[in-house]
Length: 474
Image (tube, rainbow, N blue to C red):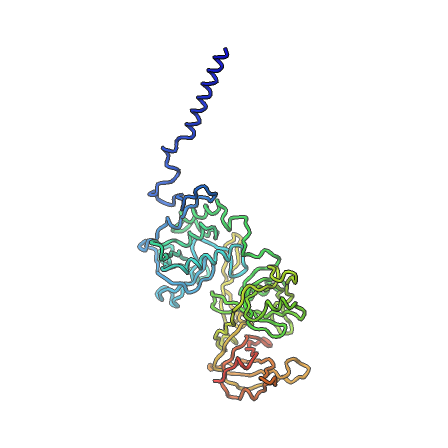
């Protein structure tokens, strides 16, 4: 009986061992899960073998789709005029496409988080990705979705596919699809376009792998504190939205006068500088004031308030932690070595200029809604630096009030070459001997070029002069 039991146990062990071998074998007769490369449409071929790491096997759909200049869809080779954000670029194009030679492109199939208005998580990363990718390109093509160039709902931006090639590449890559598969954009009509198979595959892969915008990770470049994180352009074009609210934005310190500093920030979309006045108060700690020296780039955190006496908006109620002066929740320096732009501006633009800017909001589906809105140029450029040429001095008024800090300041009425009247308002100017400079320094009829800050008085935009070093007599 014992021998029978031993034989049965031996047979059972051998059967189990044979099953194990059968389960472990079988790789020889399979295609290791990879699709035939000749299969039409996007395949799930990974970009590289992840080996034994935990990196997911991600398919490079941007490499699978091929640029065909003879597809029937219109296309053109272009260069970058201005990199705006993750899904918007201005390209230099032949005048046969756009008379101005500058095409404002909105990328088809994608919608990246905002980085030029109310800043959203992953917006800066998406913007930098697009800018850096195009900066490395040796050749760029834009392609429409059909046989004509199509504009978006605003009538001012063209919907395109962007293809690029670098010195190391032999074929063009589709940047729209590349951004999608990186997880740096949401889909926008991704299932309804010429490359819908690839856009949907790239989008679904990014979602499945929870990449960036589809992850629950925090964006290290995004501020998650209590203030609204905005650009200076967003702030200046939406005063009513942010009035009396805590805001956070970046800018370069271009001028400082007593407890007031002036910030400006360049916007590539409008090709202009936006400015802001900041009242620091008289009790701001020295370490915080040091961060706001002229030439520094800073993060400003404060409240947008309407300054009744000046009839304009400014930032006050500055936020900072004296125990942590570099903290993200307060004013702090993030760079240095910056200089004021003193961009050349006409007197006519400052006094009478108009500018149409696309204001972006979201609809109930999270899609961008673009509304072209007209602004006064002076309102947007208010508190930025400017250089105004060819001004003829017509008359001068000097403030005479010994109890006022403005005692000795001058209002110089000038006329531009095209007949526009503009006021140059000075602070109290002093010479090398600390003597007040008077009207005699500006002879009636003299022609001057002035560098100053765009300011306002009684609703009229003017130029504010801080030093005689900023005046050139022509």
